[in-house]
Image 1: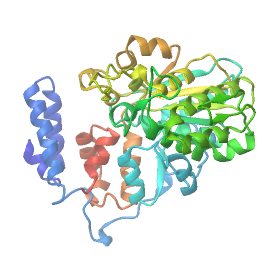
Image 2: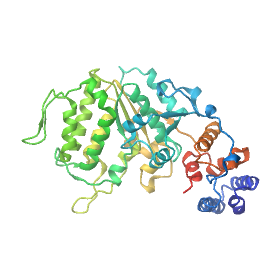
Image 3: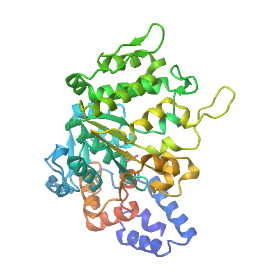
Image 4: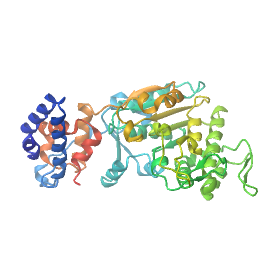
Length: 420
């Protein structure tokens, strides 16, 4: 079986091997051998990979009409655009994704390919259609994306985030929740609540992210504080001042940044209820708020739980349905939880009883692996950008081999054709 995979030109052998693997998929030994074969395939890609260079004259011109769309405004996207790529302009990319929102590998790839393109996929189109038809006088509707790892949940959220930006929503976006509890830079006792803890550096970074995404909209809306906030004897945010002053305080005084986020989210919730703005909450890795433990410890080495952080309270509050004139879109992913809780990708398992009850009611939307049209569009995009230069990738057998070895999983395909 291994020989068929090692000889990338032997497409019939590779396909026959895949068929044999699927035939014995219930035998653990065969699956382990299959996994080792795939890893071996990746390790020798630099010899004759799908992405290796070829002579220009052997490469046919790819017509982009069938896998690209000129409709770049997500407001106009619908199911007829499924499987097509659309381009996000560089200024908008900087506004929305400078501080997160794209998977690191995809962000690196878009920089290498000199453009950011997203594929229009059914889950994002479905959520966008619901947002278009929403009754914003009713409590904020909740939508939950779920699916196996690598199927494209984060990129679907990026598409929805783009829609919210061009549709005039104030964006409350958390790129990846687990970073606050597993890869934090600093924690400290809260200056607002002595029984809680703050993320000074992460909170400043999030405020910077929020302000960049919403700067022009905040200026035009001219939202103001509804009450006075006392941070210390000297530092006070007065009632009736623009929310930018609240944001500036958090940016300049990291000690109060977490408290400023909590105050900011409450002010936005009140503004939405008062019909002064419309809010879209987008959170990736939402089940990270309900993991049993964090990597944060007190001075006595006892573990600090997720519920003991100010940021946890703030973002759980904004995802309740006790406000209107907005919508909530979140994703759950097994990689957002601990290693011992990755046996299933279903929402009830990942959120646990507490998380499920907190989010309920919501509309579950599964993000699947690529279908045939999406798979071929992705391959054609890689070919067009000269990221995938092996001419056999243009053939039916070549595409079938890529489909088989990747399992039509978007992330696996991306790593499989990468030249590194």
